[in-house]
Length: 146
Image (cartoon, rainbow, N blue to C red; front, top):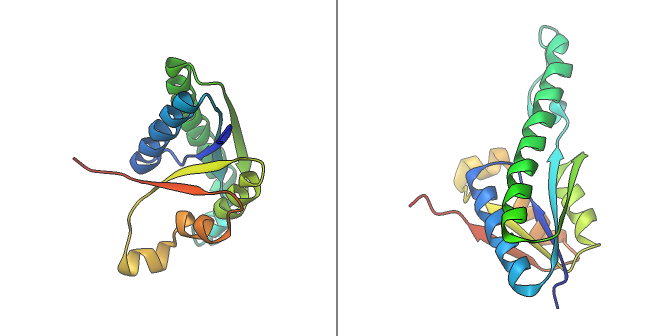
């Protein structure tokens, strides 16, 4: 049933929990997995003033490095489990890119930070946006602090 599983990660603890669950599911189903990290445009993340513009390339590069590191950790776990994976580092709006990639997969497995109230209103929820628009089923994994 599920032969191609998309597992987005942002390198956070909730995301890494979802990576582990997604890869273990892929192993049990004999499925292949795609590990995805989306680098969002810096302009969308912070207010840029004239004094910060010179740091834009450095910040973008740092975000790409963080993405590569998150993908390497996830890929290492996949290798440990013996799950065939491919990794994708893409740029754009995270929810939009995940939804686009979901069209090529049977299932999306992703984590949630579990934000509520003002935090959710101000920071938004990539997971919620993907749930609303994904053409593929979405398994949401809640991270436990314990």
